[in-house]
Image (cartoon, rainbow, N blue to C red; front, top):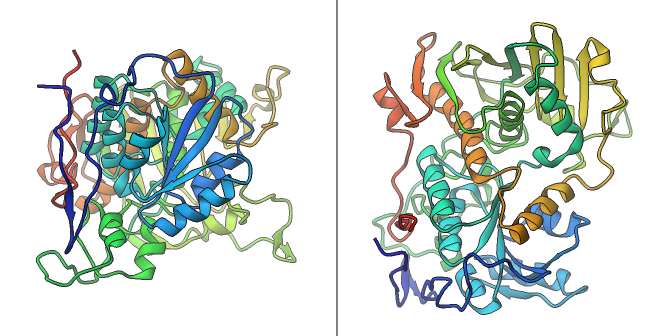
Length: 470
């Protein structure tokens, strides 16, 4: 199979034909896909929402410049580019492929909706880009594997946005667990995160009704629907666009929690062998505890969430479809996804070993005995913006052509844990173990579950074929 991409004169999208740029391989653009970039990495941002601003503007990292941004809703790209241009010139584009072709980029940050990330990421890799991918990196287990295959085929440096992997205190604690400080890990306790909802509005596929071109593009692989502001703004809670990406959702905070588990257990390139749904899925909040005392809307004794400025425990009380799930790793360690969210490690887990317990949360630790984490070796809380370490790791890896701390394979394995929770709930076989082969990434006793490993993709948004590595 050829590594070069087929050319298209245009992509017909929806009822309106929009001429999009031909997809050109890196070699045609005059870039050596294996050569390190200049001292300053030229970065483009794809998707111009709040997270893009936080990632690209909030990190005190040298060695990269955001020189262009793209968003299918052009006015968002224009506004973001204007903000960035206050410091250095920044161009705005409607289509990310045109941005890559014209701006001689080294890398891109994919900060779009979840359901668009795989398609954009694979195309960007084929065009020679190293990629920072917001978490969760994929909508389904199948497309996540396609993304990993593309990264390996095109020798791309990848970083998934699970930034706790770059935080010194989290890595130090993870190594305590991994290296046996609490003995053999018998169980891991993590939150009972909220799953997604199913949007029940009408679809337009097969209809002659037209929509705004940007909305057609935004819809990406999903069924085309009439524009709805609730869907557009709240996409993370709907199954077709994410799998529970709310603050306390399975693929929202859950992606961080499960990634923390893999990091500490050393299971970055494998997964569970058994998944059990322990109760019926029900709509409920995590309100085991009464709201805590507040003064002027600020919860006493809690600094809130560093990303959103919202109180952590109030976000964790969010109601939604949830049910306890248990998983078993190949070595017998149990993952018990049981905890109420309004107390406990919402972005991490409690590791229960033969000789003690360690609780790892974002930038926070606790242990029993206390001496485990009260050590002079403990690096302490972050001294920089929390994404700074992560962006810096990515930029350094781009220059050295090395693997990142949150390499795409690790992101795939963490996203898989999220999806296995959702699939177990959807299959709804309470108490029945679903057997999972982490190497084949398939169920061995659940055909229904295997049908959920991928989803039909709308015409024009099929994942491109990935060339075999030469």
